[in-house]
Length: 183
Ligand code: NI
Image (cartoon, rainbow, N blue to C red; front, top):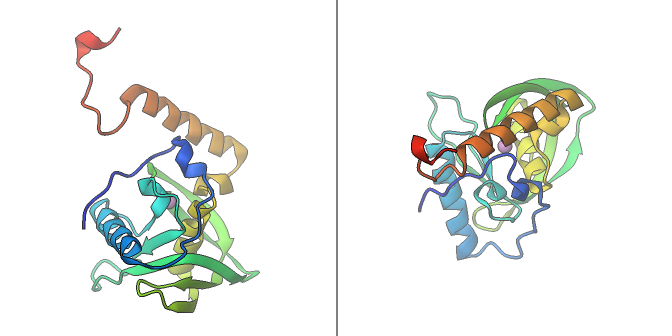
């Protein structure tokens, strides 16, 4: 198990439509375990594989309350098979758009179908935070970010801000540039 680097806006990989997983084999189980480690370390409540630059339809989540025991969930090839007409507004953030939070409106309940860590098919109905998180993560698999649900003005402002920050800071794993190297 290992912690992998998380890619951030405006990395173009975040806009890819991810490929379905053919089989939940040992490679996928390793990916799931690394994703859980990476998510808990961040810390976050959900992570899609593309956020660690793996373009596969794989998601991990844990929406357990702070004082409850951990409840890791692994979703391979997740698909929303039903969504309620009733909507819900929830404040969202994203590990790939650090320290940026906005309210997003989505269906308040969804039914989702996926394969679990053992490759078994699961169908479950979710509401509340779990429903929001599932929809946010499945969006990632389709190259969609939560800022795409905001007004054009807000979205463009966010993209501009993170594009500027990326230019200024360079890749996150790069050492800080010393003053005399700045022209
Ligand atoms: Ni996200």
